[in-house]
Image (cartoon, protein in one colour):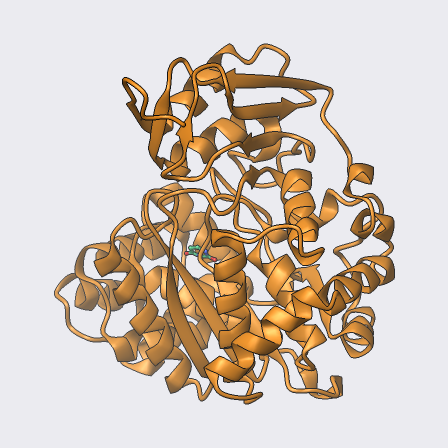
Length: 426
Ligand code: URA
C-alpha cells in the first residue's frame, strides 16, 4: 500500500478500502505521509467526493487516532449536541441547561469561534473566572452534580482531525461535505455520549449556504453515526439571519441568561425549545410533545437557570451573572445606528453581521488570536418589524475599536429594508 496509489484511486473516483483509508490517516498523523501527498488526496476528495462507506471509514479512522472517552462514570443517560456553526448561536448554553434540568446529562466539549461564526468556549470564557480547561475527572464530576458541563476539547482527542483541518485550511479543501462530516463526526464519536443531536445550520451565516447542501450533510452525518453504532439525529435550522438579538460573547451570555430567566420569547426561544425537546426525545425521555412541554417548564420554573448557575459556579465562574446580567463585562465604547427613514426590515445577512462583530473584536481570523469578550452587536429589531425614522436599529460595542465608521457601515449594509411611505407606520 502506498499514498501515491491511494491518491490516484480517489482521483479516478475508485472507492478506497477501509484499510487504505486507515493507512492514509495513520500515516499522515504519525508524519510518515507528507503534507503534499495528503493535500493532493484532500483536493481529490473535494473534487470527486467520497462514498458513504468511505466517509464512515475516514471518520472512524480519525476517531481512533486519539482517545475515546469513557463516560461510564456519569450516572445518567448522556446526550451530546453539535451545531455546525452560526452567528448569535448560543443554543448550547440554553439547551444544555434545559436538558440537564430534565434529568439527562450533557457532557460537552466545544471549540472556539473562527471567522464570522462564534464558539461556545469563547462565550463561557467571557464570564469572569470560568475555567474551560478542566481535567476529565473534574469535568465528569460537574456533570454528575449539575448534569451539564462544557469544556474545551483536549489535545488527545482526534489528533488526526487537528492535523487534517489545519491542512484543509491551508490547501483550500475545507468546503467538502464528506470532509466536514468526517471532521465533525470523528470528534463527536470520540466524546462518545449515548446519543447525539446535530444542529445543521443553513443560510448566509452558515457553512452550508443552501438547503440542498444542508440536507446532504445532515443525512451523511446521520448515516455515518449509524455505521459507528451511535444513536443520532440531525435537524436543519435557519442561519440566514442571526439567532436572537445579540452577537458577541458576553452579549450572548446575557441573552441566554435572560431567556432562561423567562424574559424573552421569539425565534431564539422557539429553536432552543425545539433542540432541547429533540435531545430529550433522543435520550428516551418521552415523545416530542411531552419533551417540548418538559423543556418549556424547565424555563418557566427557573430550574434550567439554576442548572446553569451551579454549572458556572463549579467551573469557577462568577455565577451571580445569572441573577444580574449587568455584572457581565461591558465594552468601553459603543455606537448606535438609527433608521435613516421609516423602514420595514426585510432580512438581515448573518454573515455580514458576523463579520462586523468580528471586526469589533468579538471573533478571530486565525486560530489562537485573542478576542474582546465584550465586543459585538445588539439588534433592536426582528425581521418584519417596522421602524420609525431616527429610532435605533442596532448598537455596536467594543473595547478595542473606538472609531466605528467601517464596522457601522458593514453592519448597516447587512440590513435589507424597504422604505415605507405615507402613514404605514402606526
Ligand atoms: N467544523 C469542524 O469541526 N470541521 C469542519 O470541517 C467544519 C466545521
